[in-house]
Image 1 (cartoon, rainbow, N blue to C red):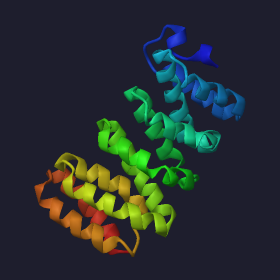
Image 2 (image 1 turned 90 degrees about the vertical axis):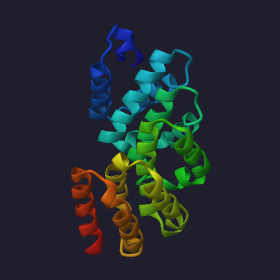
Image 3 (image 1 turned 135 degrees about the vertical axis):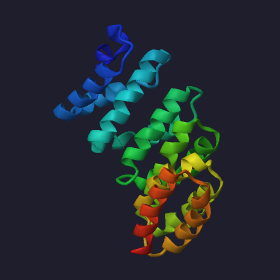
Length: 207
């Protein structure tokens, strides 16, 4: 499968990687996925970058094909390769709702990546936290304060997008908390941001 990666074909675009992800999903090829995961552990950065792209594209289409590699994705969050870090967080965001326990077990690693990571890493980590929050009341007790704090301190341009990512874990137990924070942040947003927040507030008030 490695020979089908973009870098191995002399390509600078992502099309071959997406095509490979689609092929592996269509074939339900667990052995092929294993080969791609192994590729993430090598020293060739181009191969590593293409492999993680393939994996999170698989996650978006057929997460059960990559769920067995949850602990590998968490390990990759410690990498010095930023592409591997945010790609792994992307993969975790696709599988968190079907494999929350091992992710929660390594929550400290996920939080460290969130605190130190790039914009994309942060974006995807919010989806991971929201998925954990949704999956288990005990997890929610730990993670909800983190989500609410993030909404309080993130840049105005990020409020709407990140609140939308969090919306999967909205329920009648936490609605008041989210409403309170969103109402405080709303006046400082652009008109489009306020419109997006209004939709979320409407959803929250209906819970």
